[in-house]
Amino acid sequence: MQLTQSSVGRKIIMAVTGAMLFAFVCVHLLGNSSLFFGSAALNAYAQKLHSLGPVVWIFRLVMLGLFTVHIIFGIQLTLENKAATPDKNVQIKRLKTGFAAETMVVSGLVLLAFVVYHLLHFTVRVTNPEIYVPIEGGHGMVDVFVMVTHGFQQILPVLLYVIGMGFLFLHVSHGFQSLFQTVGLSNDRTLPVMGNFSKLVGLVLLVGYVSIPLLIIFGIVR
Amino acid sequence: MKLKLHVWRQKGPNAPGKLETYEANHVSPDQSFLEMLDEVNEVLVKEGKDPIAFDHDCREGICGMCSQIINGMAHGGQDRTTVCQLHMRSFKDGDEIFIEPWKAKAFPIIKDLAVDRGNYDRIIQAGGYTSCHTGGVADGNALLIGKEIADYSMDAAECIGCGACAASCPNSSAMLFASNKVAQLAVLPQGQVEAKRRVVAMLDEATACGFGNCTNHYECQAACPKGINVKFIAKLNREYLKALLP
Image (cartoon, rainbow over all chains, first blue to last red; front, side, top):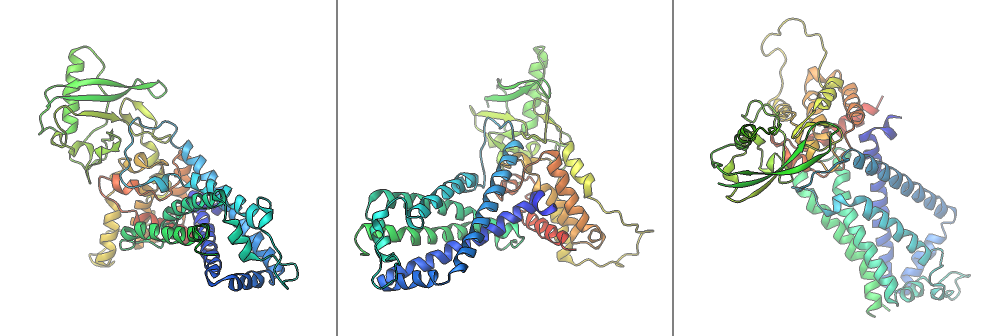
């Protein structure tokens, strides 16, 4: 099929799945920030999500699908691009592109590893089983506030989250502006400013996400 | 000026290549880069050695034949400048200069710095034309084209097909080249008839030729001696989306 085989078709698939993953990252951060309103707010948010029942699983399957498509096409396109330049010049000086754009596949794969760790940490509950305590009167529900605040008491998980979010910043700082170009929504006026705006968007996500583990380990949120 | 040149020498398409060092001892700042290479070649010929093969034609910056990676940048990295319009006053006495050919799977090396850019012709042959029967010469002003559209189309048509876009692209993608022609023709009534077929055919041909995929590095625009804007790639993407619709 044209869309899944052509150069631009697959690029558009990357942009659309990337935009959906980006939307999830934004909503996830907004949800997580209920932590700053205290234990009751975060637990209420968590209970609300769990009460959705089968919708949660449908959502998880959609996310899995988006990740799979984004990763498979990302790797496939990268391999083709490498094959298109079998011998590189001895001297290469780039005029416009940067580290983030040239390492999208690396930052993407690191993010995949981070997502696996994050799920093991807080969803599958394998890495730190001691942080799970049942909530009072919660019918076996876990106290999510305790889970998060205890989960970020040690230096290693905090460090892994900060590193992971650093790669999210890199990935988004190129990807955000890239998706507008790919779906044809850029022009003379947007192109000169979108590069920096994209970095700003990545920075907002970075600061938002790392603030949670950092404020917890430094004892500001407890 | 005295310069030390590191030049890519390769006897043929499948021969191994390597950088060889030459001294250019009487370089005038008024010379163009190609005139400097001409003098180096005169010395090589007098010494009975094989001169450096490189492409050139008009030496006025309009034909798109000259094609060299100079110090890691297509056409030497000077804004909107082809190699032939790059002058030695841009360099200093004692500089070391690296001179290499375009390197991409789709631009096979013929010899030294000369590469085969036939694949750009193949992309054009796949759809970079209009085949409408227009009859006799139309009356002046019978088919009105707005100034903004005419300017847009002309800006896209500035491409001289030198290959710097794909050569400077980290993915060796020919997307800027393909997008010029797609955009130039898509905004004109003559080109709109075949717009859907054109964009798909040119993209498929670029992939078949071995060019990579565009990942929005925008190196092409920075390297383009005509300063062609990547907004035309966004236009190509829009045209592609339109082509997917029934």
